[in-house]
Amino acid sequence: MTKQGSAAGVWFVLGAALLWGTTGTAQAFAPSGFDPMVIGALRLLVGGVALLGLALYRRELGRLRDWNWLPLFLAAVFTASYQLCFFAAVARTGVAVGTIVGIGSAPVIGGFLGRVFRGETLSRRWMIATSLAIAGCSLLSLSGGDIAIDPVGILLAVGAGAAYAAYTLMIKGLLEKHAPNAVMALVVCLGAILISPVLVKCELDWLLQPRSIGVVIHLGLATMALSYWLFARGLQTVQVATAVTLSLAEPMTAATLGIVLLGEQLNAQAFTGISLIFAGLVVLVARRLPVRR
Image (tube, rainbow, N blue to C red; front, top):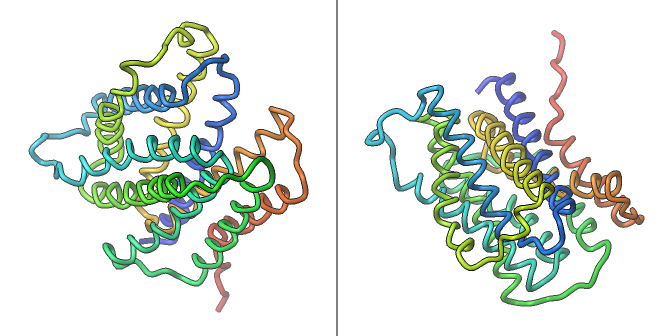
């Protein structure tokens, strides 16, 4: 792995996380009565179709028998599981606890999985960056709102973090043999199929409004198709642990957009949390300057 390739990969993953951070703000513009589960399912569907169209246009899918379908199917299962576990956890524990446990546990689990299954080295830089980012995520998530400790909700949130880390691990292996567009297209499309049953008995009248269509298109194309296009390319040269830690830029972006676009108030605790996450990302992204001989 070259230094340039690794640096480019870090920026690709960071760009994906920044796009993921617009998800909550986009949902805030949806009309009243929208169903988060439906939005999550449609997000996968629109993003999967877009990625599949790109892969077909570039003729990158290849022959189906050349694919290892077990990790492909597992990646799709973990993708769908993250959506279901995270939304269920937030419903039981609230946004604060659900977010910190779900997103905060992912880097730790991702580092463990990368170490065990891929022999990745957990550097001191990664440990410092992860500690700063998780601490910042904790302060940011707990800076406001009621705190509800529900044991089942906590387990669901940990399940969401584990699903995201495991998904990243599966994708990392698939990218060693297949093009990023093809991998992400199949994984997201299969994930959309697995989660599609949530659409069967849901009220969908709110989807007919123009704002709803705009929100779904943004979530599908920007926060799914484009972000996963960037994520897959970054993951080619970035370790699993580093990629999952970089994803903590998502809550930082969400909080910043909430302040700038939605007029949310920023207290001292939230400001400290954003600063800690940013510091952790700087530690992870910053490259040592070459030493002159």
